[in-house]
Image (cartoon, rainbow, N blue to C red):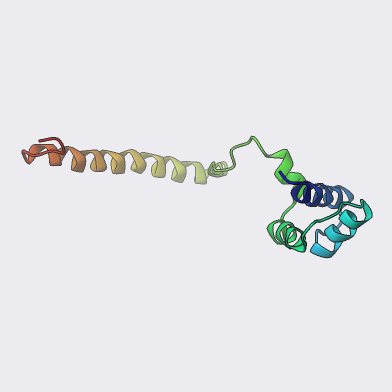
Length: 112
């Protein structure tokens, strides 16, 4: 990372830690107060737009959590609906596997 990127990153972290909204002007103010030289204004705008509407503290806490998992179904009747959906998924996979196998039955393949 360049000095400019680090300065903008640290400024955004300081703002998030203080609970202040992260804007390009505020990042610029912190970087200027820290007397970091030769930082192009594009870095302030990039970091402000990338973090706009996001909770930086939550992002840092959940770095290793994966994030792509589906939500767990609610207790009760929704659990039964989730089970039905789980049963349908393997059926679809089996159909896809059958289609792939049918290509082999045609008598030609990739390396023939």
